Image (cartoon, rainbow, N blue to C red; front, side, top):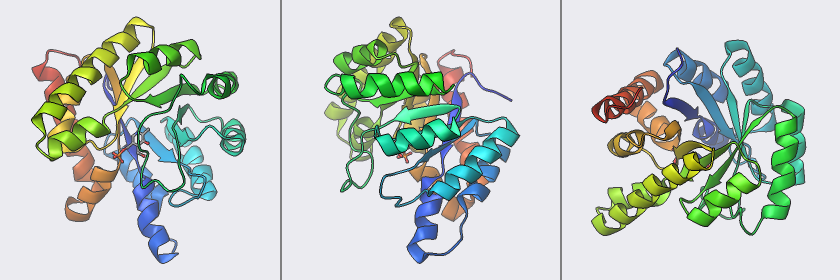
Amino acid sequence: MTHALRLGVNIDHVATIRNARGESYPEPIRAAEVAIAAGADGITAHLREDRRHISDADIDLLSDLCRRRGKPLNLEMAVTDEMLAIALSHRPAAACLVPERREEVTTEGGLDVVGGHNRIAPAVAALKAAGSRVSLFVEADPAQIAASAKVGAAVVELHTGAWCEAMRHGDAAKAELTYARLRAGAAQAVALGLEVHAGHGIDYATVGPIAAIPEVAELNIGHFLIGEAIFTGLDPAIRRMRMLMDAARVAEGVSV
Ligand code: PXP
């Protein structure tokens, strides 16, 4: 089944646990199988320059699985020559360009599409020519969203990290401001002909208001789901997230 609001499950942190022991388990490919069986509309994985979680071999296996299952692999990648060469050889259904700093714990902030136009535009063109749907992971900032349309991206993925963090910390003023920016950014992006995705830091408590933004077509969720999997199992965690997404959509009168 495909959903109007798709759920991409990011399985990076299964690899984080595997790599903590330098062992062969738990296997990201097994998590991807479970995610698909639980109703994930796609699998998302970030191949980082330092290979701290997902490895090149994981990408080979995930590409193959997603092809066999008819589900998109969304490859998150920095805009570097190395990652571009890997993406062009795998031709994933989707490529999400993200900023990457070696010392960061996770993807902090969005891509600077305004400042990086000359580097990003050719990467977008090359990935599009290889058949990948290209998304840019950006803050809900009007200039970054406008620049994303200008470089030829099909999608913007709005960074929900600041809003989710404000919600978790009970910072109502910051939450209100950042949520208003997400809503305005989604409307702006659609008006520019972009598809809108959202992700980063989403949990059961924050998924509803994001899913309720009618322009949002896809959520990419990872860390929280893998954490919940420790307590409830991955399959029930994904099913519950899916249920909360759909409930928020129905409550807003938006198609699920
Ligand atoms: N979307 C993008 C572009 C990301 O970089 C990440 C984190 O890898 C996510 C979504 C998922 O974020 P989280 O793991 O916090 O759910």
